[in-house]
Length: 219
Ligand code: SAH
Ligand code: DHB
Ligand code: MG
Image 1 (cartoon, rainbow, N blue to C red):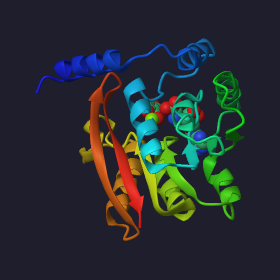
Image 2 (cartoon, rainbow, N blue to C red):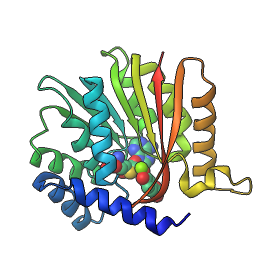
Image 3 (spheres, rainbow, N blue to C red):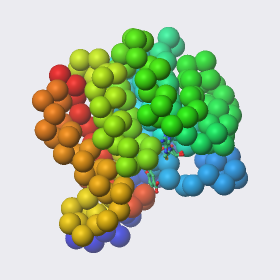
Image 4 (spheres, rainbow, N blue to C red):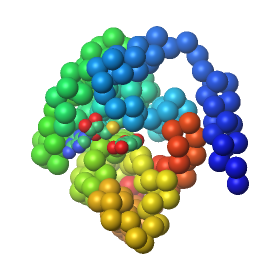
């Protein structure tokens, strides 16, 4: 299997579906200028998340791990006018850049960015209307904890998504001593065995390298 061919086809798909999108382009530029790491999802992954949210008719979305708000913009665009997205981010600098990018995309009325360690801020979301869709994409060692919260905060029939659950295949490396791999592996095992979920993992190879996206429907 020639991975450079797979990457080239991913670039072809990206080009094929590329449209002029000043808000997303300027979000990437601003994040880069502010020195944020370039670890946001790819445009094709953004389109995929957007389509899933649209297909679900999601009105309430929760994101864990905002960075500069690139995935936030994709997901928030899937919301109806009365929809709401809450996104959780640890780094004050990231939230500041994200808030500007989200406002520039004219989504600030629909999006709330909450600063803090997500495991500390997630409890504040209890007692609100449950979420239709939750996207987990923050620190990988805490993925198992985020999954517990996601199950608690998602409505029956809702969708839980998580980025980076394959990690260039390191997830099956028995010799790995990477805490991120431990976290993702525990997350995957819980996702597969929790009776409240119906789930699968999609491998993804493309312009962002080799990784995977987990999908789970809450029963
Ligand atoms: N979803 C973004 C990328 C997120 S990168 C996109 O695709 O555009 C992961 C983010 O999680 C980083 O901004 C990092 O600062 C944040 N993060 C790390 N630890 C965290 C924690 N404990 N709580 C909340 N966010 C955290
Ligand atoms: C990292 C985090 C991500 O969410 C991602 O998609 C890629 C890399 C990281 O922390 O290195
Ligand atoms: Mg990610």
